[in-house]
Image (cartoon, rainbow, N blue to C red; front, side):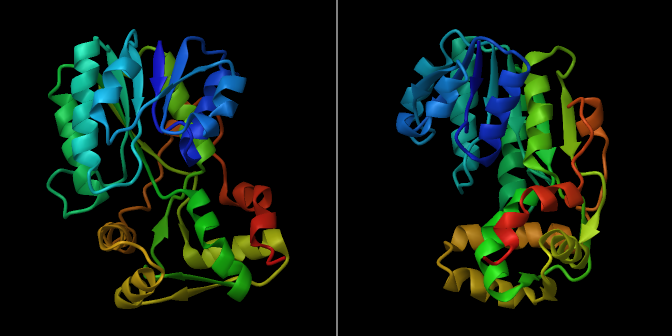
Length: 287
């Protein structure tokens, strides 16, 4: 039995789809709201209600499971939630955990996603369970969260100057995750997952312009402008701080690494940004 957590999120939905493509059987998904999980049942998979904020629900979800995907929503309680899941997995006799981690995961990092995921990685490594770490770079699909502003102004605002990142399509992350959940040979591996090229936001804007037929430009802002704008938009302080840490990684050039794990592990050609831009052009056309 394979347990997928985070199955109704952006990447989790794609992982469910990839598992279906691979013909996986014995798949169960942990969901907070069963009403939002009909696509999982339509795929022939089981759903069980549970919540990382209610650790008492995890034991039942993990009963009979031998492989599990650990994917929690963004939260300042990331480490605590993942620690509780790992302990439940140990009690249930789970053999292998595929942990959805983050770029820059390091328990010695500054407060933010990198630190929280780094702490959870260390805990999993010390748990005695077999593990695989997935460390995806910045998602191409994160741009969809800026689509309203891009449509209104034709501009992308980011505080990273002309630094580059090897943006990855979540469909490629899902391909790797599905293989790690269904195949042997991924134990003890940490995969940094990237797209096939490192791009600046100026290049991203140019590619979106080509795909949509409208002019989209990049405006480099200061970290303080980013912070003020994020807080004004209603983002909580903890999330703004975590995003600032990610921006620092990007601006320092640490997100520009390109790896080949999508091809070698996911068994597919990595999605280019041009392909992403064509596939999602409608979202950025300002119509």
